[in-house]
Length: 361
Image 1 (cartoon, rainbow, N blue to C red):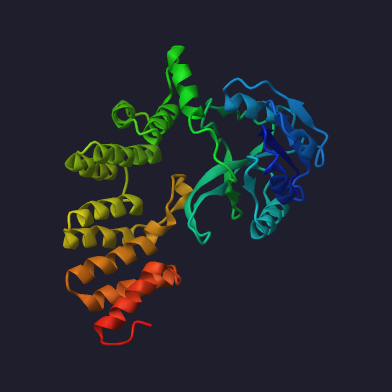
Image 2 (cartoon, one colour):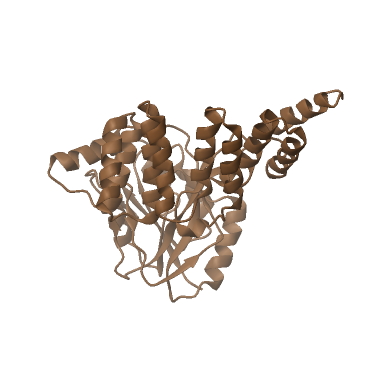
């Protein structure tokens, strides 16, 4: 059985660190904590789980801090978590099963990262991340922000997931500040970092600047296909905010030049036609979304609702407004199969009962 070093970088995480370490301590064989300048009880809490706590001065470089944490690891594999991550009970069991059976020839273990949730706790946003990396195999973190390791060798896709559960907002301007400082110092961003710089501009409602960065990123032609597709969608959102709906649609359609349709893009095109009350065209795109295979292992960002619930509930509305109530009701029930307690599903059921002269209760 393999052994694992949990390697974490922390700063002022007293509200979440114990929760994280409790969820992982029984799964790993060593805990490495690199503290980048805590002034709260973070070190005291970490000391309950390990005596391997190291100082590392923060220098606006997440990759540097993560590489420092990995440098202290002595086990076969390094695993990373953020302090506001947690492994849920079912994922702990899946993790232990993986640990007991993993082929030591594996270089990188990829695992789902659940980062978005609805009010009922259902996962609404997920993507695979490199979670375990073979120690001393030459793989290093790169990127001052949105850091990543490029996997090499044999890759294994695990069943366990890591759940990201924030308890407080982080500094919303930090990443943009780091990127802007790099650019001011004359640094040329490599394609992945250029994509994420555009995203930070988008998050800050700097539509024109974000659009310029994304367009340059796409025209350079050096981006990863999943980032290219996301960049097209983000261009569409920027165009929409800038009052350019036709250009927004063109940006969404551009996603198809990089790979076969993604359900997320199809749902956005459906929304475009829906907002124009072109329900027949909207229904076409929502129906196409239902035919798109979901493949999380591609590594891109995944919105699970786009592969079931969302297109079904929207098809219900489209066909209802087109006057086909029977077909609309059938799609409502398909949506119910995805989310039985959805308020929209329940409201629609009451509506269809009222059309049939039944009590909506």
